[in-house]
Image (cartoon, rainbow, N blue to C red):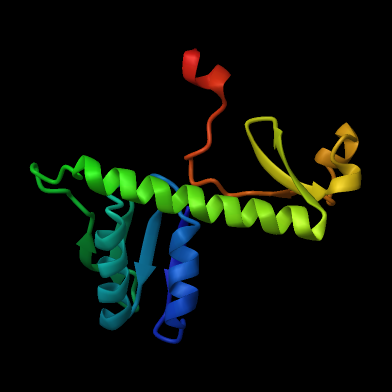
Length: 148
């Protein structure tokens, strides 16, 4: 898949669209400013599996970028623990909010879905429009997947 970033695309929209990318996806920009903004985000997120291209009007590639971490780019254990604590805190806030508004997060198939609490036990509701899938950016796995 690829997304098109034009010179009129707002930075928040660029940020949101880049967050939806998966491994192997491409980003096409037609503007140097947008190209540099996307490049900065990919470097900041350390996403090395996304190809960023700056294209001209004839769809010819003018520039390309793919993040390559330095050989010594190993994240210190202390930082990983701090990141882990922040993520756990954020997830707990999300789950508390779900509880407060009557939503249930359910493991379904190989992902997570959110449904109203009163529908959470209905298997048909889990595959209906009432269930919203969560984009986990390939960070969620089940225990069974880990031991396979």
